Length: 418
Image (cartoon, rainbow, N blue to C red):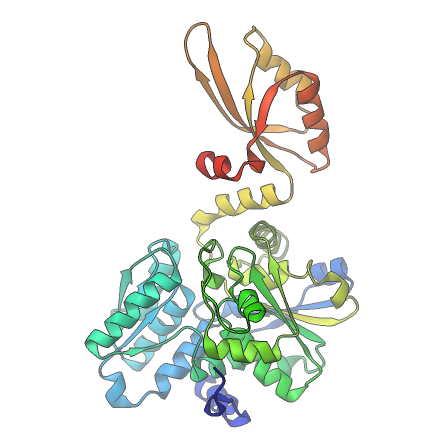
């Protein structure tokens, strides 16, 4: 619920900026020639992936922790995080010599766990609980109640929002004539802070949100008229995958967001790969959200000055094969089939020579032979050079009277086999 005391003033942002000035980096705002040409606009990237902890989360975490009285700090702090907020809290704990306990989901990428421990340097203890941020948040709140420590929320707090708002202050300082800013939305802290500051400076600037398709918690809240807990979410975009946004962040976003669109996880993966291969930028899934959203906003941004907040670069290299897989599937370049080959010599050779195109590649083949006289179906993964080749491939399979099921379209089967 909105409360007058929660209204952030110019002084709140100035205090956060002064508090963080000698702690965080003023990250670059870089023009992207590639994206600008593609979308017929001036696209700038706000490089929070270059922050000390490789994400903007340091700003809010440090600002809140450093704002607590010493007697409160002496009892320690606790937080729940999918990774980036944890690193911000760990950094602040070491800097302020505060003891902290960090709860993270059990599925958190190992890179983020290692980074949290590294930034904490003995001042933090990491505890893995649950499958989602919301699961470990309950554990963290219970811990705070039991031991009298202060819970440092990742987004739903005015000090956190003011800290994240310093991203907007830097954008205003570097590009005051920006027409619109695209921000990734998870719990809503970044959108609330950036929007609250920029709209105060220029009410006509547009604030556009980007949310993962598998965790559209803010979109659901805006439709419902208040925060609502999603029953199930896809945690792939771990930095923005929350079941329920905050009460305070919702109140800000409901007033400040000019639009919000969901972005498919596969599209985000394609953006990650393009940022890496073409621009040399390492972005995590949440970090690439705003860039992936350019496609969704393409008509609106034409001939405009647009800022995309690259919110984080904590991407575990072990995730790259999965990211590439999701990208290929989304772009229509990877297809899986269960094929029942005819029981005759040369059937497989004919498939390779007569069905597959010259640029098609078999990337997976699992064949089960029941006995000497009978073989079971084969799971076949095929990568295409062009998505348009799919119809030709399928037409040849039908012309050769192959019995097959396309696994991509069978979601339960796909999750089980792939």
